[in-house]
Image (cartoon, rainbow, N blue to C red; front, side, top):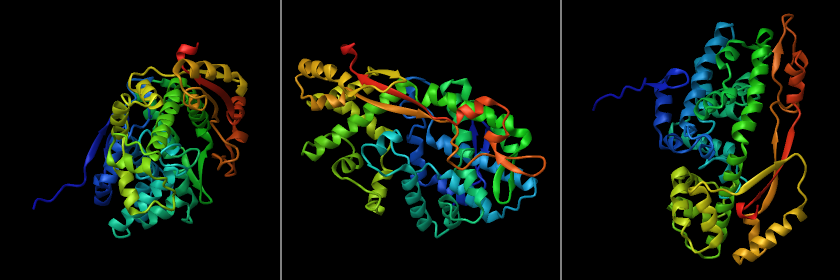
Amino acid sequence: MAQINKLKIFNDPIYGFISIPNALIYDLIQHPYFQRLRRISQMGLSYLVYPGANHTRFHHALGCMHLMQKAVDVLRFKGITISDEEENALYIAILLHDIGHGPFSHAMERSIVEDVHHEEISLLFMNELNVKFNGQLDLAIQVFKGDYHRLFMLQLISSQLDMDRMDYLKRDSFYSGVAEGNVNSERLIQMMNVENDVLVIEEKGIYSVEEFLMSRRLMYWQAYLHKTSLVAELILTKILKRAKELTLKGTVLPCSDALQFFLQHKITLEAFDTTNLDLFSRLDDFDIISALKAWQYNPDFILSSLSKMIINRDLLKIKLTSEKVPSEDLQPLKERFAAENKISLHDTDYFIFKGKIKNQAYSKEAEPIRILKKDRTVEDVIESSDQLNLKSLSKAVTKYYICFPKQLV
């Protein structure tokens, strides 16, 4: 039998060639759990706003691993000892950090798989892969959970300046065309160092950090929290909620076996056994889109109307405001819509609702981004910066929204 060459390279439009460092990483990428990420959109339904935003979480995971390779090289060059085992653990942890995302990402967490976050499912996948790969992921799982004694390793994977954020900002900017997110990840990585086991950025890199935080804020307003992306995700959440409601009442809806299972059962984190995890691994964006294509013809007015909105990109109207919307403002709209469509006032909640969004580029409560000064002292980037706008970036900006059918305008 011919030997497979596992030292492959990927041609990435962002970084050029990405190399697979060893056979174990190759085997993890080849595993069906990871290949599924080719069928999970990185930006959810944002392609309804930015037609180019069709890239996947597979792209993103490889990009993160590539940046981690750069970070390991830089830190070793600066005299930080990273063993081969630790290096491999970092690559595995960052490669698999998003493996638990469901179809269209966050819409699933609020409807089908209730109250189970993708980070928790990622850990379940990693544990299952660890069994399949005879314990070779032990150290990667320790690092991912924050149980490893070298703190900076977790910061490279999950912090306010990690490989995940560096890749998704640059990648999402490229594919969406929103230029403001194009961060200089190469410069940021070159400025990284470790002091007292904590990840720091050298003082001369402070302006790159400021640019990174500003880019993140702008990408949230222009892409991730764009009002059309927002309303599309809210509608999808409502569709899945309605589908689950109908299924639990005995209606059989046409969809894949895996989706049918999650519509029929409420799965908690404790109930996520190997069988359920395998069923979850069979879910991707194609399950949802094919279901919506069928459901748009369902006799249920709510399910069919909402499904048509996504399929035909004829969405609810959404209005953003800086002030809270009183509940009584929605009542006349609900009464009118209920009368026109012969549905109950309770059912109008699927079409007329309100909520809020928050954008905070930098959190003072979370693990800070630390700046290493020339005298070897370390301080929060907020204190080091001479830019007043950086302090404002640490304040959460909340906006309120109201959604309703366009015919009610």
